[in-house]
Length: 91
Figure 1 (cartoon, rainbow, N blue to C red):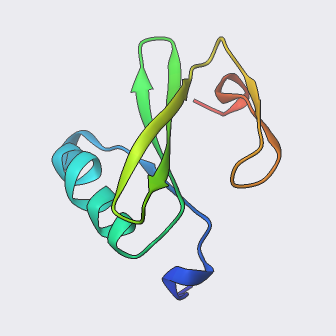
Figure 2: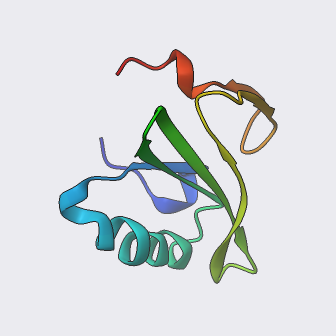
């Protein structure tokens, strides 16, 4: 499905070992340039998935606002209220 960037509140990128550099550097820069307010990157950790949560600052770059691992589920309010619990995801 194709949509305009202004209609996107969150991009969730699942990091791949084959595209780690693009997932960490190139793609976030493009998302920021497009004005997408929230960006999360999911990485494979030793004990399960780890979510790195970023928010757009001044429409230019992302700042890390927190990480969520499989042992520390949290309630988040941005970009909308939800419980973020990586331990509940299938492996």
